[in-house]
Length: 100
Image (tube, rainbow, N blue to C red; front, top):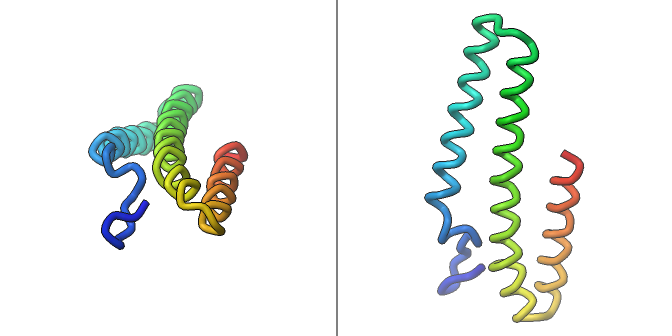
């Protein structure tokens, strides 16, 4: 999305929310490191890895939704090759998320 000639992230309105979610995930990962340092039971570590992964996926979906809602929608409204490029970019992002 462009604001006064300057690129603006599509998630700008939810930036604080995204940052807080990422900080919680960072805490989860630090907790995982402590679990490994403390020789925690494998299944317990795996359970926490799954929780952190799910949390990252939720952030990714939020970012993708914002990208589609703002960046792609704006490009489609403008038309031209920019619209085609944004759709292709979003499609590639979805493919990366599905493969992960």
